[in-house]
Amino acid sequence: MGNIYTSMKIFHYKDKVDSLPKDDESILAPLHIRIKPINGCNHRCRYCAYREDSLQLGKDMQVSDSIPKAKMMEITEDIIDMGVKAVTFSGGGEPLFYPHLEDVLHRLVDSSVKFATLTNGGLLKGKIAELFALHGSWVRVSMDGWDNESYTRYRGVADGEYDAILENIAAFKKFGGPCRLGVSYIVDKENANHVFEAAQRVKDMGGDSVKISPCILENEGAKNNAYHKQIWDVAREQIDRVLYCGAITIGNYKRENKKKKGQIFEIERLKRNTSRIWCRLWLRLQHRQPEPGASDSQIKIKSQTK
Image (tube, rainbow, N blue to C red; front, side, top):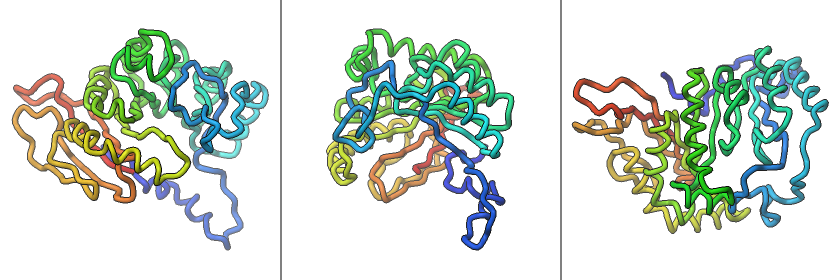
């Protein structure tokens, strides 16, 4: 399979590229639209930028706001009629907390519009999960804790929610649909030394990818980088364990071409965006049949930063 995390996707849509010059009078629909249907959420993440008045995303946020059903269905019809290629549902709040999402998905299933969602995973079950699994493009679950105790501390949820979400992930993959399920692991000083542990559990549940992302503490990028620089070495060592390759440096990643006997992870491709420290490291986990004599847990990883 080719690299699905690429900045070159736009070139799959030549008609859109051709419409970009100023002297071209045609106006084509956006290729992709992101919709934030609701600001309410079933989790209370302590680092959530949408709940901090001091951060840009949280400024003037009204938690009670949501898109009325009639307006949402009107938007959905407009998206279909305009020829939009794909829609992502995100927050604000928790998209799966939106009471009319199932109606929207049924309409999109009957169209050519692809759809995906960000979610905390707590409500990724039942008919909603089935619709995404069988007809969606991808689902990305945000996580931070590495066990029930830590997850409850991060999220302000009932004890046992972490295990419940892992079960939701496993059940989602059992639908057997084409939808890719990944996890975005939000890193801070407390969990930086648990990245490997978290990635391993995602793999064990059948997840397809892990995105390692820093928590956002300030509006200014320099302040965020200063905070994360303190835990860079710890996070780097953890990522090294996941990649199972040589030392990683801030400027670039070294590539390991030889796979060692008994190695769980194999590096196929590695690319580093030097403009960021480690804000968006992607690890794509592609399950495969193990080689003769290899562990049943053997997988191949393709990774790329964006």
